Amino acid sequence: SLLATASAQPKRDKPSGGGPGGGGAGDKPSKPSKPGAPPAEGKPPSRPGSGGSPAVGGKLAFDSATGKLKGTWAGATIPSYRAPMAAPLLGTVGYGTDSTLIYGPFEAGFGSGPRVTSASDARPPYPCKDGSTYSGYCPGGMDVKTCEETLFKTCASGTVRTELFMDECGGHANPYHYHMDPVCLYKPDDPGHSGVVGVMLDGRPLYGRHESTGTAPADLDPCGGHTGTVPAYDSWGIPEGAKIYHYHARTKPPFLLGCYGDETTSSLQHCQRLYQSGTRKCGDNAGVAMSESVEIEYDLWCPCYDSDGKQADGFFEYADAAAEEPAMEGLTGMRLGDKVLNVKRAAYDGGVGGATGGGVGSAPPGFAPGSLPGAGGVNGEMASECVRLANMVTRDELTDPTEAREILEDTQEECAGFGELTRVVMPLPGGKSRLEDPAGVGEVFLLFANAEGAGRAVRSLNGRKFADRVVSAGFITRAEFDKYAA
Image (cartoon, rainbow, N blue to C red):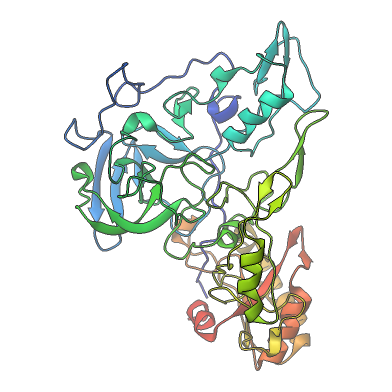
């Protein structure tokens, strides 16, 4: 089979220079002049494509069949990524309407460690300076807002080098790039749906932070997008009222993009599974030391955040679905430390276990539906004879025919012990780049003669380490298996 998955993490761009985001200390940001420069006092910035000068940087055309933009922009081919798919953790994820680079939420890091000081600056630059002493630390893979806010707690008062962080337009560094809401590309205070501010590398347009109601959308997925009607953007041929999947800028992480999404990326778990390849992935970190006395909970290099800009949720699974509503009513609003709980039914997207919606069977990443204590599990209605093994192999391993064959044979031999194994499907890369891969690369799909054998495989393999990876095993439907096996 040459079917592949979109969940393999694409190669990340390497930032130029030694400083965060490609710039270093002392580098003067090269801000775009129009419309990216800060507006003159009393004069709002012009909105590109809305009556003013047309957008520049190439030629893009709207494809009504896919809801995507196609062509070239700022020298890049659009689209150049599929969805759903992980976005580069560092470097370019899209371009503004002014051709300025758009980055994700992360930087490469500031300083050399939580307890290190220096008499001279270095690359990456130290984010704090007290007289002639440089200090401060933010690890790579932390969003720029959390980094800056934490530095005001860990560094002496008045020593944070704010010039290293975001300016009033949401960008910084040289080459100048956006990390946060690019407010100089549109008018945030205008009524109605915000205008287009950029295009992501998957061809989906990026809008300012407001919906047609003049407020931030409440249904953005962890990638930062949702499906809805948008205003016209003549420069790129987007018609008035087109109903498409599109991204919005936010004031909370991931700000502009968490992943390349589509109508299926509805849950935090789905986003997290897109970042399970390589050495930097979701779930690898917890407590992060920022100084000798300050430690914060943060999952470095995981750009998946909920609507509140938080990275993780807690999960409960009830054997009796009738207990869900009382639990939600009783826990919502409860204060826990300095936090207020917001409890809702988990919208499990079916990636690991194949379930949809909440109730018994909803599960966090790495758990098969029904595998938590007290649930029906294998003998329940969610079990099937088909199993998906995620985070099992990497694309690089599959490009070697000999290694791929050995992995397939080892998997078949191992899984035959759980029950009558009818078929094993391990999709292979389809070309030189991930864009040429079909769906399923990096995953293994098992078809057993019955659900009992599949259940034994899920219970045994879920959470087991394979090489340096933790395997996620769960049920999928027969229709899904047939799609990968075709």
